[in-house]
Length: 130
Image (cartoon, rainbow, N blue to C red; front, side, top):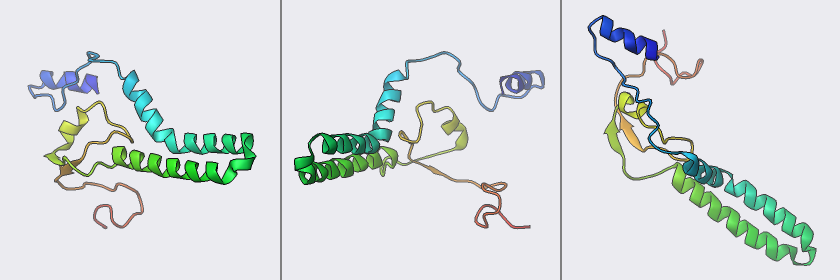
């Protein structure tokens, strides 16, 4: 991609996307936060099962408390992954410059344009049929 971008100047065209290769900050803290949020329901389930084996006489209380924690962790996860505010109108070129985006940390936005091609082959809702 960089080689193609460098060739634009030879033909007198401007670059479509500017790549900034300087590392601006460390992303380790965000990685661990996202890992914790993504795996919280599974971790809570494993911890509840271990506690049920350790304390079998209070299994109903442990399962009830674990179920509440599990549902709360799902709500926290849903709040991070599917933000329902702050939608801004943008385009794909601006979104490509965003670095801190993942399945957990999303960018709510509104895209306008035309879909060219087929997103999923065989799906009748992706693009036009010929």
